[in-house]
Image (cartoon, rainbow, N blue to C red; front, side, top):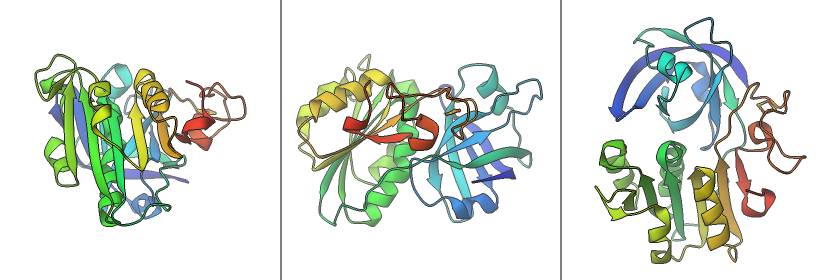
Length: 247
Ligand code: FES
C-alpha cells in the first residue's frame, strides 16, 4: 500500500452515469490481484473523504477504474481532466483467489450494476488460466450496460435487465438455473449477494465482493464492519468466502 499522485490518461462517460477513468503511475506495479480497490481523494478540497473505487482492469502501464456518478464525490471525480494528478491510496483490500482453479474448470461470475466493474479483471485472470467462465451480468436497463463486448471476449455472457430492454428480463436470479459451476464469484448490491449465497449454498467455492461505504480504507475507523465483528470490509475483504459473512 502506498500513496501516489497518479496521472489521468482518460476519464469519460461510457454508459448512463458510468465513467471509465484510466490512470498511470508506479502503483500499477503493486496491483497483482483482481478485486482490490483504490481510495481516491477528490479534486474539491472541501470533500474530505476519499472514495473507494474497485480496480476494473490492470493494464501494462495503467489501470482502469469504472465508477457510477451518484453524488457530489463521484461527480467531482468525473471532472478530472486528462493530465490531472489524483491523490490515491492503494492498492487496498484482499481480492479474488483463483489459485484452486485449473484449466478447463467451469465457473460463474455474477455481477450487478457497478458491481460488474471488478469482475472484468477477474475474467481476464480466469481466461489466462484456461478456466471457462459464464458471466451473468445484471443492469437496470440497456442504457446502463457497459463493457458488454469486453466481457464477451472473455467467455459466455448472459445479460439481464430489470426492464427487459436487453437480454433476459429481470435481475440475475432469472439466469442462475442455467449454470452448474464449480465455483462462483459475485459482486453487486446486497440482495444479489444474498441470492448467490443461498442459491449456491452447497458449493465449496463461493466468493462475494461486498460493496460498502468506507472512510479510512485501512482498518482504522470501523466504518465498514460486516455483521461479524471480527471482519472489516476494507482490510479483510472486500472479497469474502460465502460462509464468512451474514448479509
Ligand atoms: Fe475504516 Fe474499514 S473503512 S475500518
